[in-house]
Length: 156
Image (tube, rainbow, N blue to C red):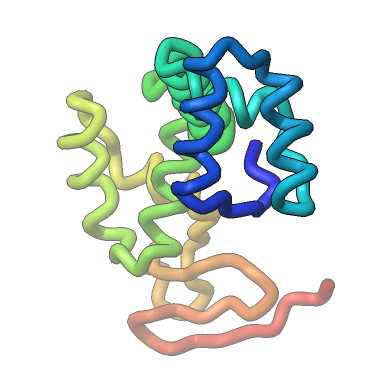
């Protein structure tokens, strides 16, 4: 992990010359610290002077980043075949602005199995409107029918 110190190319070249002369990484680090005021770590010097170590460190860092990315961004609801995944997908489509009438068609294409409109409405907690009886009535704190605009406030 970088400490934020940017070493000039001349310091790196000096470390490589000293390593070719038989100096150890600890000796090189101390010498650079004496000459330049700040001592690099032995691992930093090793990365400068040993290309095999540098390649191994880069590979380890890339693998570590790959694992961290996978842990952060893997969908936690399991398999795409699970009902929880389908319900979360349906809710996500709705929050992205996809009309409820289109979500069943999208899910049928994505999951390669028929998804009924009633499943979508049940997942989104749609209820029948008291005025016109349509299923375009979204349940929540304020319920409003999108057809007849009937509206009621729901107690918390």
